[in-house]
Image (cartoon, rainbow, N blue to C red):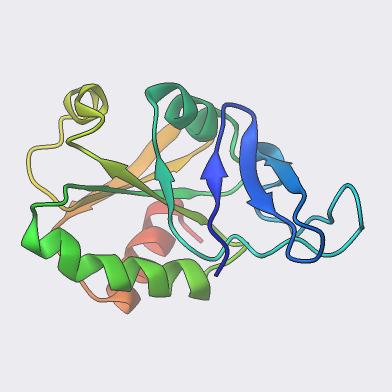
Length: 154
């Protein structure tokens, strides 16, 4: 799996062929792009992406063309560590259908307060800038996928 990050315009990934950094705009998050230099297919968005700033979070939520599953977590939380591999499974299974991101509540406490995160892990689904659903507690990948599907009505 490729390590990816986010800036305020899109998802950044490195071309596996030439090493060029490429940006996939949020409006194209559900699509596979090609490297701007060598035209090789870019890696699929198949792993959770860590959000590192509130600005990146805001840009992603407002502009992403596919549903975004946000995992609010903290490194000291046992259930959060339990659900992490399940979130990986979800990201792989749902590549192109929705995006999985992680928000460390210790690093971004303002987001935790804004969304009134009272327990972790809490999973929130956003679509076109709106919260569509939320659930708290660790659960298996299949239950997480069902939650997202139900939240977006798909």
